[in-house]
Length: 153
Image 1 (cartoon, one colour):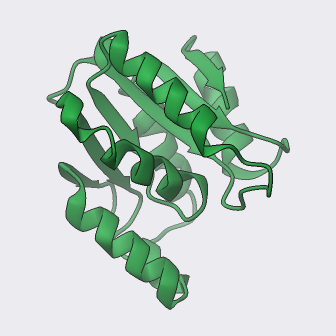
Image 2: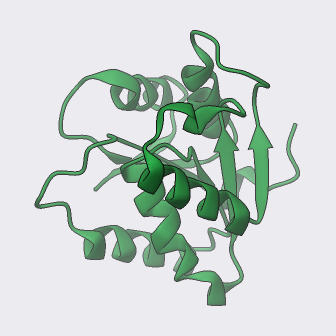
Image 3: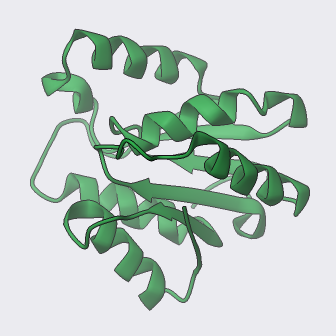
């Protein structure tokens, strides 16, 4: 299925809107602890908001010889991003260690397919969830059903 080790792979889920009190440092500390505990591969869904914030923080950890994998639901994921979001997204894609496109084009359910792929190929999920709505709660519930460890930011 993949060429990375499930036991040393982590994935992320979170809302597209970061609250004003979102703490980058708390997320950075969680990632540091995961690296110290042997996690080497990090799967990121590449959506605006939390995902791109995760990607940004992971780029500061590259000295630890980690792999940051962009898990893109469809090749036109950035279709409705504004200019600033698109620039941030394309820069992240360019800097990923590997890009996995799960679909050529958008279809209803492609985001959930991406989220299941990440959970299925990880042993732990880091979640930023302040509301039980959307793809974040879907992914958290899916991870629970798969009996994955979950860390909440």
